[in-house]
Amino acid sequence: MDEDIYNSIMSKFTFTGDKENGIKDGIRDEWYAKFDLASPAEARNMPYTGLIERPDLQQIYLDAIPHCSEW
Image 1 (cartoon, rainbow, N blue to C red):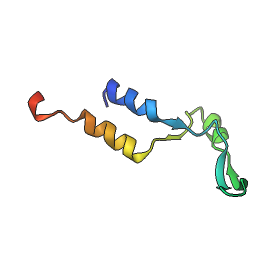
Image 2 (spheres, rainbow, N blue to C red):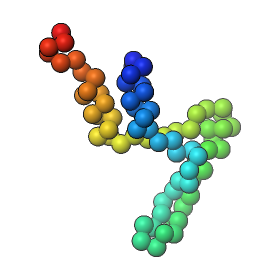
Image 3 (cartoon, rainbow, N blue to C red):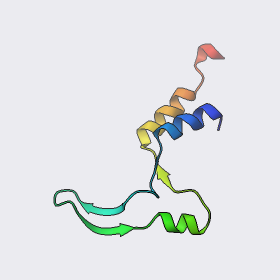
């Protein structure tokens, strides 16, 4: 992956290890279960996991495809 694509992905990327994670009732604002995503990464000296929305990732890759006029 080239640096421009990486930077585009990271601009839309959300790290999850430093946030509250789990299953939450969106109406009553109550947690059914919480998941610790930070401790496992920290214990293994690894970066936090994260996410990017699929349409954002697809658009980044589509935008990176050279156009016919660039060939």
